[in-house]
Length: 84
Image 1: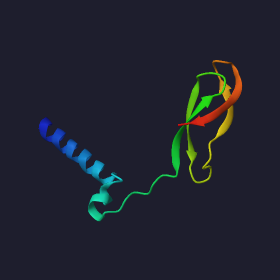
Image 2 (image 1 turned 90 degrees about the vertical axis):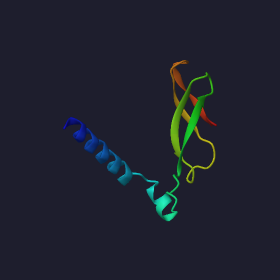
Image 3 (image 1 turned 45 degrees about the vertical axis):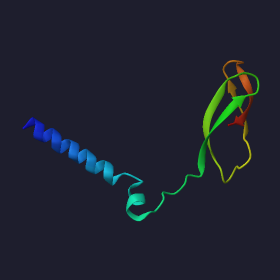
Image 4 (image 1 turned 120 degrees about the horizontal axis):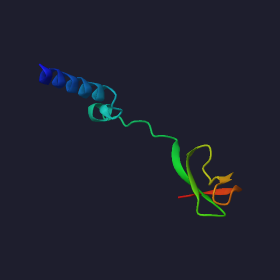
């Protein structure tokens, strides 16, 4: 009985995964999912090797970001520039 219930539970998980798969329509209809306008970027400190990871909107800010943030190595606010 326990084996049958575990099989039913795994089938339910498979069904749930199929329902929430964003790429399911690609196979069925040939429709690509919408591309994200946000990309992950790396901000590097101008005074040390420290860096942050953050997201930015590619369409609204196509050029490179520069932000003033806290650098724990230098223990002060410094300018961070976007790198690849």
